[in-house]
Length: 282
Image 1 (cartoon, rainbow, N blue to C red):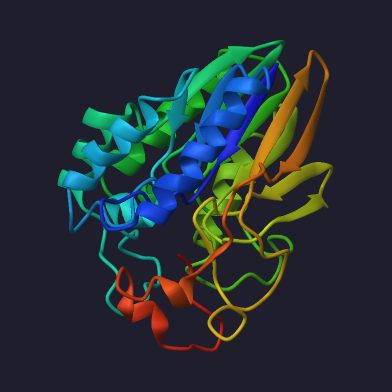
Image 2 (cartoon, rainbow, N blue to C red):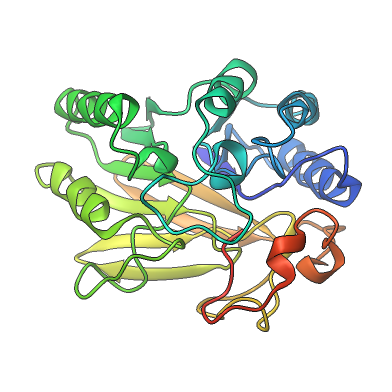
């Protein structure tokens, strides 16, 4: 099975350059024998402030040749209430989450494919301390107990930079206690990988025999003057190949993809044009 993974597409009527990159990616998907698309969040440029962007994104993905599953990002439904936020960034919004679900489908999901269990999670609930967060935790416990296949997790935010030890609160990652809690829930399962977006960088590391992958943005890169460089900065997508007891990630840059730069997108995110010590997380 081959799964195309796109992240941080930042679709908006105000950003035709991002729509173009998605169209190039979907044309590549159609020619590449892909079975499923997963979008790792920030589907929209700012769905919290501009709900019409969800309908716009839905129309763009209606051209997809295969099914798409998505998880929300901070630009879709806002940042968790207990998570740090960039200046001007929206807090978590229940109406935006409702709109995400109405247009793009469930914000969490579990599917069985080719001998694997693949679980998508709403990272923006971690740190809200509300009913929706508790419901997701209970749902996750249930779906994990119902299966014993190799497990892969999909969410918007990476769990950490290098591991759980000594982790401080940072908007780039899940709140440390929630990252630890999520991994604890998988203790009795054969967790093979965790893939996330959010950072606009590509990186792979192995921690406790689990592969942690950062998927790059399909929209733009963030220059080093605005964001710390940890991984590889490029505009691209990924492909996940699943065999019954093996997996492999591949970085893909379809011909025609444009490597947009955040500095060319200041009209969309003026608050991100201010340099900070550790860089914004788009």
